[in-house]
Image 1 (cartoon, rainbow over the protein chains, first blue to last red):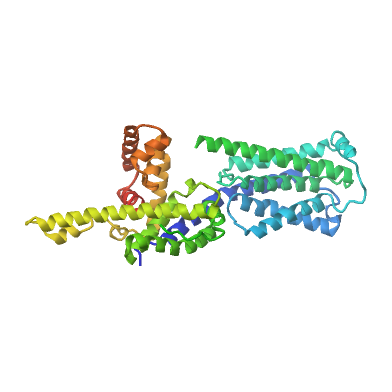
Image 2: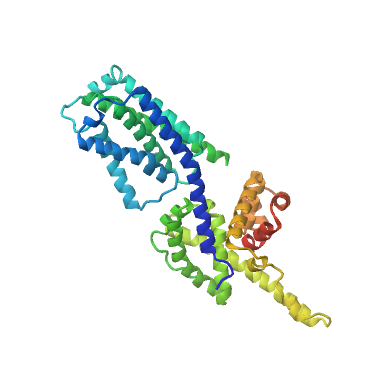
Length: 212
Length: 212
């Protein structure tokens, strides 16, 4: 029998690392929940929220759970799912986001209609979403929840969580259901937010690693 | 040095372990322990000592895990080679110590006035002799890590390469592209600073546990 049990010591060290990450994450989660509740109260929930098709409402609720708990937990290193679970999530997320934000579209739109819409009626929703995403990003950053991790893909999980939270917030506020609007302003805005937040997070990460 | 081919999935487990995944560490430990045992038995040929050295190898690897870098085109092989390199350094340090002790014993038996049994006493305190509980050991590891992190970058590099990777001063000088004298000055300052920052127990742990 050896004098020291390295396995137990290292396991304890890894557990304390996860605890430390959780200590940063929980206050950020409380702040995010408070912000989203205030935001939705201030701008108002859409009047037909509960009248949406059941599958759409269900996918929105699943999206809330994913973006507030599951994606940050993976991104921050609180939960380490198996590769198959991750692949399943990556495949499931776009489908859920599409169903949650757009539903099952019954009208077809052209690309020019989509882009034209962003600069006319959809600008408000896109701006709303970018503002929400920015606040969520800042809460995460200043609360210390975005502890730098070794693997860069963590950034994409966090950015996805922020973008989905912003998309679902706008979906719960805006009652427009026209495909041209939801595709361009809700999903389009979400994609822009995903790109911008990932870019920003990669830059911050790159800068911090350069300083080390 | 006969190394068997590494099992598949070692690199993935290592990457997750470095990220903080305890389950990945369990799998890495279970896979590598028997291999390290076989490797060390060829050098040391004493089972209880080999058990101690495996534990020490795991602890050293844990403290240096952030610096593991993928080299070459065989990721699983790189992980195994990295652990074997640490194990080899640990074994060499052990043999050096044993050689010094044997030399001391020989001197003592040759001279008339000395008690050969007294010369056998290992001057290095063990964790058991230090009376450190597992919780206290954990605290000490954290203290040592925090103290090393507080050092200026130039000194921290030298301590990490010297104590954690077991590199010689000449090798460190070559790696950092500075004179060996400068490395020694940095190391001297760093250890002086660590002596100020750490409790006596933690300092002993650094010298015994990390640098043995």
